[in-house]
Structure formats: C-alpha cells, structure tokens
Image 1 (spheres, rainbow, N blue to C red):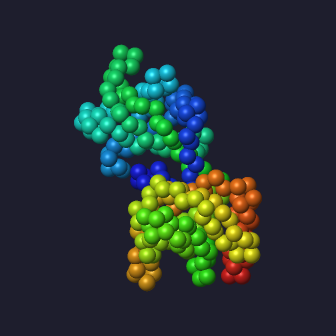
Image 2: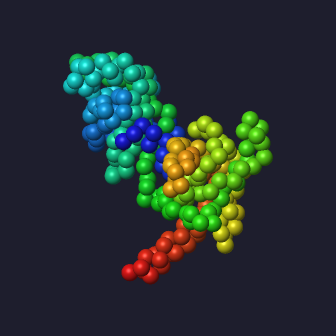
Image 3: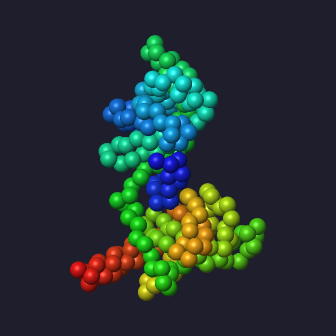
Length: 249
C-alpha cells in the first residue's frame, strides 16, 4: 500500500491521545502484526508492538531480523505502519525511531503518533456522481489563490467527504488545507454547506487525454442536517444505479 493512502479522504482520523493510546495497546495485547514501510512498498518490515508508555510518550516495537533493514529504519528515522484491529485496517506514522533495549534484547522505540487513521470503508461508502451535468462544489478562494469562488465538478461522494476535479489547477498545491464555507448543490435536495479538508491529490488523465487534478476531501464541521442531505443524495444515486442495472438485466 502506498504511503499516500494515509491521506485517503474518506477515512477516519483519530486525534484523541487517549484513543490513540488505547488503540496501540489493543494492537499490542492482541499481538497484531504491524507492517512497517521503511521506504515504501519495496522495503517492508513485519513487526509488533511490545509496549506502550504514554508517560514517556513512547512505544516499543520488535526490530527487524534483517540487520541491514534495521540500519535503514534507524537512518530514515520515520516510517509508515499498517495493521488491523477487529477487521478494520489502521495506519499511522512513527517519528523519531531509535534503538532501545527491551527485556534484555535490542528493540525499536518511537514517539507515540499524534494521529492514526482507521479505514472504515463500510461507513463511508462512496458513490460515483454523474459525469454529464455534474454536481458541483463551490469553494471560496483565499486572496493568494485569486479570491472569489471557484466551481469544481464532483467525481464521487460519501458520508465522509467528496472528490472533485480541478482541470484548471486553480487550487495549486492545497494538500492539507481546509476551505471553509464550501457549498455543494445536490440536485432536487438543495445546497450542503461544509468545510472541506484536502486529504489527497493526484493528477489524472481524462478520456480526452487532458490532464486534471483530482482532490479528495473530508467534510469538516458538517452539521447533522447537511450530513442527512448527503445521505439522502447517496441513497438516491444508489436507487438510480440499481434501476439502470435492473433495466440491463
């Protein structure tokens, strides 16, 4: 799995320190294997969490059985990790990885991560939005991006967020940025107003061979009423898709 998936827009980010410590301890207690990505998929170490010490803001992990790989881990100083807990995939980054001793053996120590990501795909089921007459997101632009507002066609939507295309590259390198007061006009349902945090972006080649930039966003501070409207629209898209499939059957 690519490191960029840590920023997947429709995943749930855990920021509560108490919850992070609890998750790490559950992973340790259940002896869940942890895939440690040193330099991407080409350099993977399978390890496990041995101890979580919130008082010292540290966790201890098994070291690699490969001596050269351990050197690469320590040289990198930070790694991405992936594991699972109760069939939900969990991802996090570790900083300040260093050598330590644990119960008489060499081990790895790192700072407790500030955030973790739970891949709850069942909760945030995505639906592709219409290509013809697309739904649009209206985003207020800050002064450094020219001010005013810009309109972007959606490519999909979930209860966690949206993805849209920026064919004119109006947003530039907006990774991690939050845009407040965005409006999504849902057909026959009405406008949804929410903040949008950019969680990932990549360039895509469209069918006409033109390049566009795809942004994945997470809803920020969305009201219950607006979220209910998003759910209503997703349900409607699902019904329309099922009707089309039944007509083809």
